[in-house]
Length: 355
Image 1 (tube, rainbow, N blue to C red):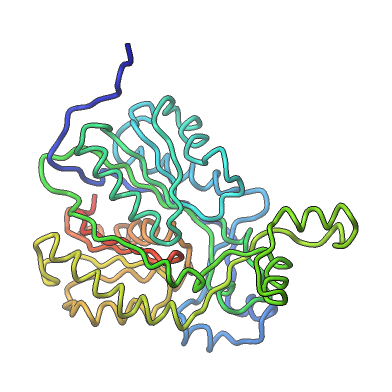
Image 2 (image 1 turned 120 degrees about the vertical axis):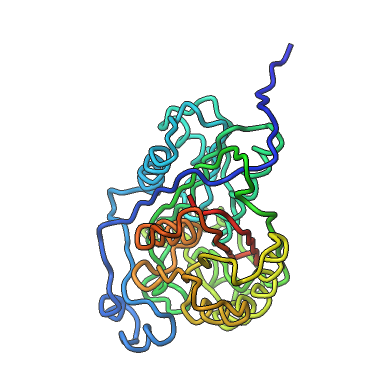
């Protein structure tokens, strides 16, 4: 006889606690300019970024996820053993399998909680919140840990100027649990794979061959070339990120902005009802454009974590939410509209009640 981990279905769920991990190493725009031909002024004007945090070699993505998760659990007032599921969103975890979620669950004492990773880039955390909400309301879980974590410094080619200067490291975590009142509104999400090439992670030498030969080359082929001596043994094989900045900017500023408006409609509220707007911290100009499309009143606090933290992909939204509550504790219990968008291209938006 199989025993199912079934809990009591509930009409609502909510975020019970948030946690964050920010690396100690601060990288300024002047630091960035030693690798690319640019200036502090140009980077600030184009992106709004002043600094970004990056982890040292001894700090892993798992280390940051663990720190953020422990704070979230403490804030929620529960133990790791009370978790029914652990979801981790990341594009920079160095192992395709096993999942980071399974290892993290073990270190938190959550075994035998269900555990899996989410690959939805900068929308990963919001995807995770949508899944946590569904798991709890269906009765499949009672408490779910959702983590967005990136060590993007592991996949940065510092001399590449389409995206490398934007990126930072960090982790944000949320504990989601049952609620007697609505705490997570319906999620509006989707994808547009026709723009898959707009943001991509590639292997440097493989990508050059793709351009030269007009066709992809398997990663294993690079390894074989090292064995035969056709490629230097010390040639880099680590993946690096690239993006078509203009395509991403137009898509996020206009197409995703429309979807964010739909998320408000799904929640049954208007912009004037919001306490905060927490968009993915991709670019300050995109944030401003979305706020304009939404016609947010001045009373709505807009997260601008990007100025100090840079673009942290899946960690972006929870890190921004965590900082917003630290700086504006009066927002606790208020509705916030959060949206993630990125490689895929994918997006997800929902209104949540801040813990």
